[in-house]
Amino acid sequence: MAQVIVVGSSNTDLVVKTDRFPKPGETLVGGDFFLFQGGKGANQAVTAGRMGAEVSFISRVGNDLFGRQTRESLEKEGISTRFVLEEENKSSGIALITVNGQGENTIVVAPGANASLTPATVQTCLNSIPNPRFILCQLEIPIDAISFLASYAQKEGKKLILNPAPAFELPESIYQQLFLITPNETEASLLTGLACNTEEDYPKIAQWFINKGVQQVLLTLGEKGSYFQNSIQKIRVQAQKVAAVDTTAAGDVFNGSLAVALAEGMNWEEAITLATKAASISVTRMGAQASAPFRSELV
Ligand code: RIB
Image 1 (cartoon, protein in one colour):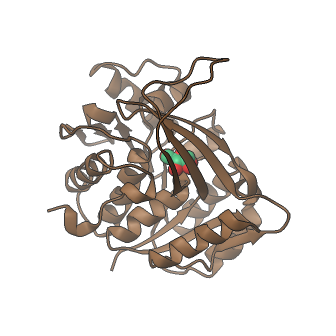
Image 2 (spheres, rainbow, N blue to C red):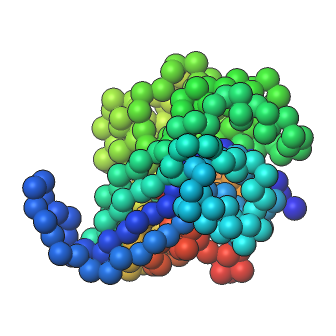
């Protein structure tokens, strides 16, 4: 069985469907309301579990109702909550999400206990997880924890995958410790300062990361698919055309599936194709973790 460590956020998503997004200062009467389990870290962990991996998930929740529901839901998914630690006197992470008629979203996150995931806590948890080679993380936890993970991965010979979402400028030293970075177009532009709109832009962006020391780059391009590059290979994978209902967590489903495929020993093309299929199923369903497909659906 493939084994993957996911380090990252857990949120509860409060979601309202609406035909269009409100303008600043406008009150808009929307459609249905949904409460979903979310958080980029938890979404990736749940996806990895549904893909058939044994997942060790390191995260923090508050000592409140949402935190308890998060832990219960993870346990139902078969994911151990041994490393989903409760933080006293903190609220759990919350995301306020609107989803429009085209399935696009806006997301505002109140990190709560996610902001307390320190390098020391991550280290203590990692000391109890001896085997997995692949570690997957995102940027909804403190940058100190990400920097620690990057150094740890390099020292211990682990393969660190960074999904740089939501993106902000990273310490230079992190890049040379990354096995793989998986930005979307907006994140890639923000990190590199380069345009990421056309087929000609993708190799330039990838080369920017490779020059910084990243081993492989995978640009996720939404309905345009993805672009992979390392020092010996360039791979362009197209996405399947689907009617999108809710694109929330499509990137998380992609990253969680990809990590499992790589941990299973698939080659880059096979792994990206599997992750693309999983993400394209997720956008046809409402919700974050609720939309992640099971491995049996990827025939
Ligand atoms: O990537 C989608 C996720 O972003 C949501 O589940 C929300 O919680 C935010 O973390």
